[in-house]
Image 1: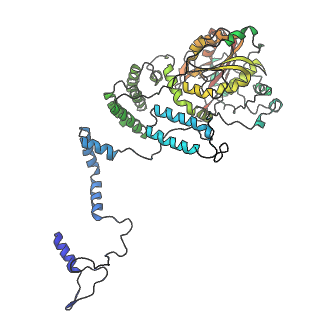
Image 2 (image 1 turned 90 degrees about the horizontal axis):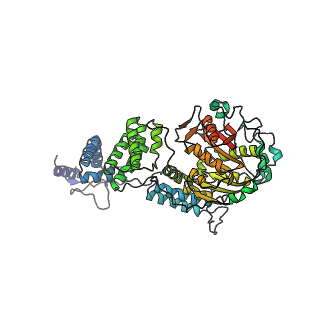
Image 3 (image 1 turned 180 degrees about the vertical axis):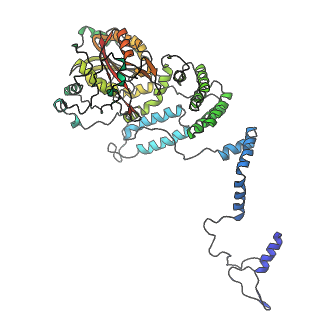
Length: 573
């Protein structure tokens, strides 16, 4: 029926004829002109909540039936380069999301002192491409709000403290430092950390029951003379420790050499791992590819990375990401090709493509991890390093101190310690009561900056541990410590030789490594080197060092499972 006929019919129906005159109009009836009388409504109750126009509903139903077809037409036009279609795709189909959760790990904010550490992590995450500048800005607003919250250290009306030093794991109250008598003979605090009947030179020790035992609980060290007695008494006398007497004292003639500390260059700024390709479209495709990867759409992510690499063939981050995705897709040849390309365009290998080739079996045992890779890795990791290690029940420094005190004797004091791969200073803090001076060495400027705040080192150096040791004078240290730092070295022979040269005749080299049940050195799934006990013994022997402790001990857990490891203390033969 035509629209005018419908209107006429509605107007006519508004008049009710009874005889020769019209009946009074009801509230919902219209006049002969098709209108409601003044002051009256056709819907006195109002429009029902949620009611929608019938034409809108009909249109949406029609579009829903053919939505897939319309989207395909739009995407086809966009891939053909038609600008309006491209604009619709980015503005309508996939617009920038606002208010979405940002998957970024921050250290726990327990006090105002944690704000600076969190802020450093946000800046590092933005430089690494984990956060956009807008996301970083929004997180900074949360930190600013947290800093204004009054705490026990900053009462209302009082400015929050400006000392935002990094804090380690929470300590027990002061009365938790019991006397040496309270812990003697119990062994309850450190359950059999070194308790094994395996010979130090036995390569196959990794299969023993102790190798897979749970690591001991955290050790609280007290800066009193009794703490050394307590720590030393917790190592069982049945450990695989040579019974040769040692002299824990420092030879007076070596004091001058120990004081001659090499001067180090100033600390450089952290280097971001993921840099721009120089092409905005390639960068945008790379970012969207990572979003697809996080959503689980690996083929789409790989396709977008290829499109980014067509525009920027020297984009090392995109090549590495492509290799990683292809490996997840079980495309080993494609992954190998992508990792090799990443290595070609980034000779410093800041992403670790060389390590991935070793793991895929496309390269030999492999050169040591490049300084660029280790530096970039830990510059990003530094702000949350201590918090994550606490979650892994890490206690490498404590286990090393127990082993050193057992060999050197209770109450031992060292003149000068070198902390190789010092990180944030966890080992330095554990050994501080035993050492008059300590020097920390690490490749990561960000880690060094956090270690500086612990105030346990007289000097800190950003350097490769082996190269820095080579600059030390002969017989200039009586203790060299490396807590889980040698897991980033495939070949231990060079660093052991330099440590042997630097040590005084009665000094000690103490370190921890990950291990495995086979022979030699392998690259683990977490891209850390695992050294068999036989290999460690051979490296020490070649350097003129004799193992005093070489026992299975797990320094950390991953996925709730203790990681196979070794704790080693060696001295000049």
